[in-house]
Image (cartoon, rainbow, N blue to C red):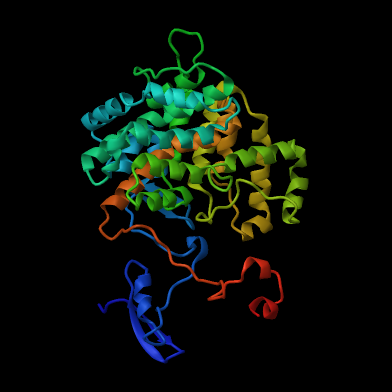
Length: 437
């Protein structure tokens, strides 16, 4: 079979070029040969927001947005959510295979014994204002761990990388819980090594005076499922940030803090909080049709619908919807659910939304279930950051080990002044002729 190639004729020069095609892509550097003359830099691509640019090769997460498919390392998300714990999935995402029973036992033990925070780190947390947002506290504290573990800077050492990965997976729920307790003025609760990953997080969040915290197994399992669904999602904004920061060989604590900062924005990790605000604005099920009409008129946005990648039903949304039923059996039905279900029903039958392929995404139901479980909206993005740390670290490690990767440095299309003469201060603001006289 002939090698796949793209034939290009540059109409500026009439020169013809053959650009190799591999895995459905061409290399942008192959376009640099297309020049109008020896002084020409060569052709570049212009792609704001990376809408159609692959910046890496990755074997971690596969998404087919048109078919609504999400797989970690080849395993369908539906199977993993049904049959695995979060730490099993974290191991899979990080190391490429589901763990054997001995490997899982060792991995759980390692993570569990890295949940404690250094006491100086706790004092660092105590320095934040009482009303500090938990996400800002989390970003700052994760970055501060770089000073606690200075050996983390040796990112090319696989043993050092493995230790920092384990530390981050273990400590992220502790930091998250402490930021929440800080906002409420409650004393911090130490990790309990007898509990599972999700149960221990709930313990550090909600334990009060009882001698031993007993997590509701239904709630703990639902939280584990939510963590699995959020473990990784290909080259999203925060994963791209993790890779970009890590490409300078910044240590994994600083790189993770950068990724978490990217996650904090309302267009990324904060979207489920926006869904709750929308449901509050709607108010009741009978007002949904009127709100839909206002969305179609451009007066409001339909939060939690549509996705850059998915042009079909987000598979994570259907799993969350299923998990919500078990949670509501324990907590009682969240009134917002009735509004959400009606909103989804009408939107999925309306030609306006069908034509635009606006289907519910993971954020549409996650905020409702988190709220029903007892989480306040300000911690929703922190909840997202806990499991996504596994994905960030998997992306970071893959990038570190990829011989093709270099420090991230995109090109630009310069649109400013090419050259101007300096104007003394006393002449600035004068007509051009007077200023140069």
